[in-house]
Length: 223
Image (tube, rainbow, N blue to C red; front, side):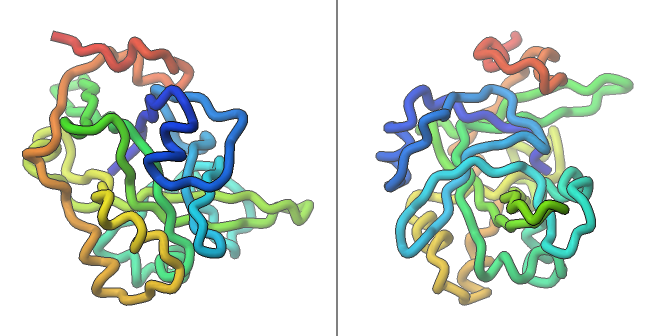
């Protein structure tokens, strides 16, 4: 699964250049411990343009009675994303990129859970494959939400957890966002474990266990 991630890029202009974003987010700031139900930066396609927005993490289906369902839908399994009622429609029509600099996962050792940071070796920012939805609250106000798609874990993640977020290559990102692309087999071909040779992992402080802690020091390696 993916239950926490980071986006360490200091300046929005860096993200705008990397992902060809055509708008500006004046309130953008890096985050070192993004948790479910919090807002995070996502990129969607509107009229062929890459638009950055701040969406709530945890997809709320249009038919949901309240927001509580979002906390249970932070991840969507790649294997069944085109079958589940909550995800099938948006998989074909509302895909997004979730910019990131890595994610955290916990390995169970006895009664303890040891946190690790997992990231790509050759780049400071990349993207998870995501889907998004708009839910209307009781006041008919729209709330935009998203889920991160997960796959089976690769060899570097497997000792810690059996699932991992789907990481897209830069070459895949445009086709993933393109709203007119509805070729199921082609889209699902992206939803594979990332090459473990291009990734690394290390032990981090237990401070990351609390979403209240959001400081750069969370990235420090624990020997």
